[in-house]
Length: 502
Image (cartoon, rainbow, N blue to C red):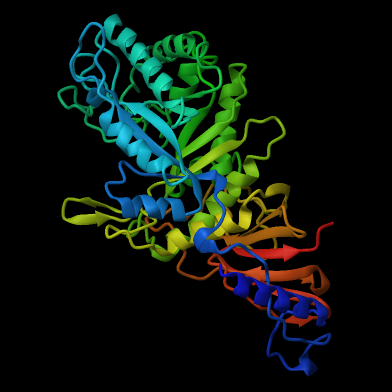
């Protein structure tokens, strides 16, 4: 932002503070309980185009493929990039001593760190000589031993300058049950297929951790993210329990962080434990605690694809600040076992046969989408923010909050609520606190994820305690004041409200 423009904003801010406070509206004074005044919120935020990086936020991409996509990642406000290293590309042929070719990944990681981003490395895909399918258990003890040696070599190389990687993720979606032993991917697509053999996965974690962690105590060895959703035919839905169970996987002490992938269309599986992504994190904590462990968690993927279950580009942009705000709120847990990093899947839309797969923050031509702008503004708003209070209404239960509707009035058993007000109060490095609010419409138990009817709620806040309201892209928003209270209409798209620090 140009220095002259900054000075003009500062002058405007002083003028605004000298004026009587109100939040605008065109309602006739005769219908109000108090005086109505026009107020244009003026805030001193960083330029969102070059805003601060969030230490929580990450993006997923495999690989960048071009410099423009890498530039977009740096502009997004994310701090981390989840990148993949495939063992079969580094050591395609077994030699003694091992022969590694790192050139592809040196280039890729150089592309990341050169833009001020931090890589998280996901280690996957064994060579054919060690495991076939490449996603699953090793052929023999030699395969596992060589995996351990490769992980040690990878950590040695990339935890050192200039890369300085601290997070090493061991496989991806290992809870997938192998479907086709003649296919390199085991008939799947997630990069792991250990679901039928949690004991072998536990043995791999134990061998890797005991060999690597003593040598590199400052890195985090992360258990590969579990899908832990969908059908038990496709995924072993008890995989985490079995891996940490001393009688099966016996690996509860053989990773520093757990991880999972969270997609909102499976939210009903987790709502009884907490709202949205917080619920899944809480269930993982409960399972680890049952084995005597307490560890932070990483959300290795979260996102929403357009044109599925009624989702649109707007739905995607709404979800971005919702899920990252909830992850940031969870990260504040006093025990240190909250969500440490949340990763948007993916940075970029990608091509699939006969169609685009529109998961990305940018399109296939690297153009920013609404979700990109939403993440950039969220990172700018929430830089160095710390949760003070979760003031949200519960999204699970049998008694809806006043004014809320049920997702499915005809449902039997547990009732899932809709139109619940989500309110998260954060302290920031500025002079004000920040309230992030939206209406959670819940998940319909049908083929359509979203209600077509817009959900709104009205909240009141003392006018003399509100200093600015912005939408998810940082645009100033104004509301009427009645009887000294700002009448804030909250919808599904989050609002950022600067409020008096108390």
